Amino acid sequence: MYTTAICDELRQVERDVVEGERRLAEQEALVIELKRQDLDTAKAEAELERMRDEQRRRDQDRQRLLSRLQP
Image 1 (cartoon, rainbow, N blue to C red):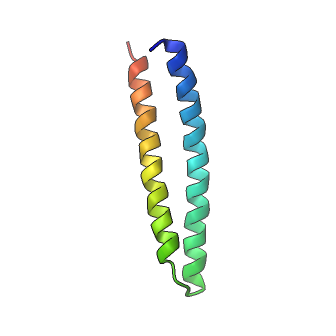
Image 2 (cartoon, one colour):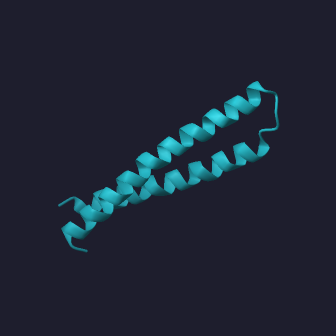
């Protein structure tokens, strides 16, 4: 893969990572609020775990791309 294409993909993955972190923070706040209100958190916590898995995959993609840019 050409360096330019890798850099383009890396920029997109970086944007996705930042957006994923924002969404994770929102979901974590939702779980905290549900707990504060003594409401069922099962669905929100399951969604949070799913989101964390996705974020781990994005982080792995970022690392993969960064390693391709190494000489």
